[in-house]
Picture 1: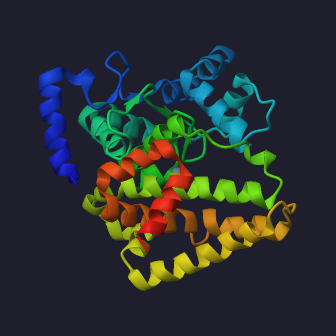
Picture 2: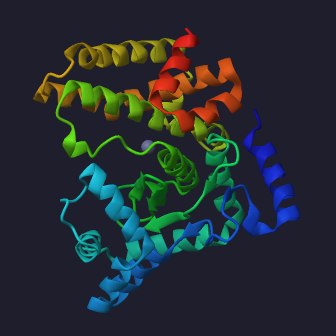
Length: 323
Ligand SMILES: [Zn+2]
């Protein structure tokens, strides 16, 4: 497997041969790697609020991507319009200091074209051979920390985590762009609000385990080389064999709960169990990434990256073959 440093060098060669727009993972005629229109429109709006300013935020491609994300995840009510979404994200007026912090981060990332390219290439390394992104990474103001849905992804530059540790921007870039890639081959199976039965929940868990596990795994080489990898609890768990074994045991216990329940309707306790997977011990991130690591050891990186195309059934089957 290529290390990020080797990949950087290779990307440099590719750029030299093909011109900067032809780097792996981005269509030759595509816009820049990052699209900052949303966050720039929000900053302008905060400096001088107006209806036209709000319309500008609502009219960005990033807003279309966020609406797509919200429709599946229920982040906002299903009837939300582009203008309402823009208004909601800018409701809490930041003070001048916060705006200045985000402006400074924005300058940093806009100047770092090579790092934009590198973090997207790290995601491409774990997507099927020849993968091409159709859309850039949208840089937004105010929506979660990042979002991705069926082919597109974004990062919220105003999230406090990025101000506290700007390196995280590049790691999240890889994570979210991997989601954008994988969901372009295997779309979300259904809107989360439509999940009614244990069987549907199991399908969702299997999908999310692959989606989150592969994204964590794709960013792991960069995480290892980042200034303080040990500050990331997922990274620490993955390097601690007794801990990851215990997490895997908890994961399968929850998994079997839904597997055994068939078409039973979901209870409040079922939704609490889901929180252990997505929050708390972050089981589907950590156990999912451990699965990716084992699959890669067994079938090589070329086999693992192809699984993005084939979905959770193939992912779980390949993992079982490693046991
Ligand atoms: Zn994720």
